[in-house]
Image 1 (cartoon, rainbow over the protein chains, first blue to last red):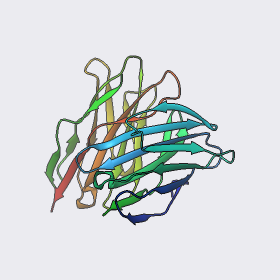
Image 2: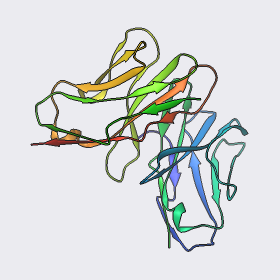
Image 3: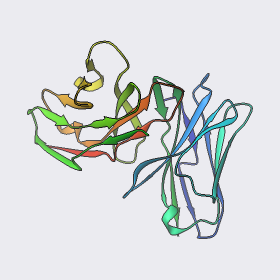
Length: 110
Length: 114
């Protein structure tokens, strides 16, 4: 158990809809990272938050947004969903010398 | 910009034989280097990391990796492969300047055949 909790584990939704993925980092970790894993793209970094503030942005679409709350949990919001958004979404937390990943949320857009 | 290359999509090895999964990296400063493993329908599990010190790093499940600065490589090795090692392996790099995200390679699927 990595100590990083993601909910839900699975999500099936229709095109055009909006979903929210939730991540609770390990106790004490201030950084949260979101990654997308799709079959043909590998692991793509989406966005990083540190203690409530956006720290770095990767290949995140404008339809996607995230935030980190005062209790350090984070949410990734995906809107106007398309078939191509179907993927495994991972959250990670850690420090400069370690990163621990949650089990992921598998999103299927139908 | 940081990047990682895993030149092999697939590596096949017979059980009991040594295995190598290759990784090369590019980073402007000095790197932190990591290997993760992903089993089917599971998250990423940490295997080992290079932070500083000895270039040969030992990790979980008998895996080790050697940091080679001149060749900018961090190949994953195991002296004797097990069928249970069959999984997807990811190499990742982070610039040690600042709290930046990990950048991953595309992954290498390891298949160990009995």
